Length: 502
Ligand code: SF4
Image: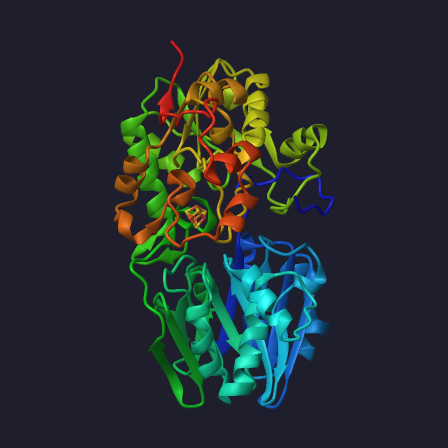
């Protein structure tokens, strides 16, 4: 687990990364990128960086920390130019170090290339071995550096970065939404399954903006044009904006977790406002998982829209029962139980007057390891609640993610470790526990199954995972039968989506 020593409750499913890019002659591109990254801060809090081109050379500044800690007037004023890309990082591959911070820069015979990446490749090891056998020496440990080095080598051969990216795309397997900067162009690239979001905006009729989420476009006052299509390469330079479809895939597979937890509620992905999607999940949850209670409370902040939807549909009153300290960054805690519990208290405080003597229906987006939820439930009970009923707007997470979200190894996932929902309920100390079912989730979202990745709920991965990569996140017992041995008899049956005692 990544640790930076802050005494803050770990968000259970952690973010991927945020990417941003702008082609904006005459605009203050480094400041606009700074604000864009500010809007994408929720996607990664380990490091932040901006690379800017003045048409002749690329300058990059990246540091560990939040966007507001990394950049100040002095650093921004040194980043002068007309084109820029930026990145906020949470490491899902590669260690937490400055070497892995982005944008990363490499040289080719025509100049420099900077790259910002959101997602995770599943064939990094094979690609890296191949490059190393050709004499490539790596400075970092991430898949993003492998992609950058591939593009630089290919550009030497092809004579253009655009052609190099197009040549590399079919060889990259997994999730990638990229912003790429050269001295005179900015590119946006999305993997053929469209696992991570990436959108395009227009600013002041001239400038082209790329961002992981539309909330970053809105913040800098640009107009949302459209999403970058899966498998598409979009290029902005002095000739304007053009696009080419480079790779196709049998289906789309946008990460459903973007709707459930990752994206900001004021972002639009596809045709769906994330806030509305979450509220729809809450409404469906109220239909499928009703419970008698006195008040519906959210776990702040991501549980809010689902709790509002649940209250609306169930007819139960909505109220605040947990107050979040807004000045605590969404970052990590030492993985020690005592500090973890202290972390929960620093982040959330119970509103005793709203909880005491009442039957609480607590709505949240997901349960990953279950430790944070346990701390919150204990906190609500200590504040005098009569009963605590937990309703979760996502189905049980039973499989790890290989496409860029750190939902832990399988052995750490509470719904994989426990045989039944009743056992999970007992573990977290709730009076009842109701998960959303997969069909309920799709109904609540109003998005067809064929467009989404649901693998952390179903174990069916839309992009095939190489065996060694797959085993790396499965526990030993699981590894054994996955490798072809007979499945152990002790292996847990799949939990049903809901269970309440007696
Ligand atoms: S496995 Fe889960 S978290 Fe990962 S991309 Fe698929 S839906 Fe998203």
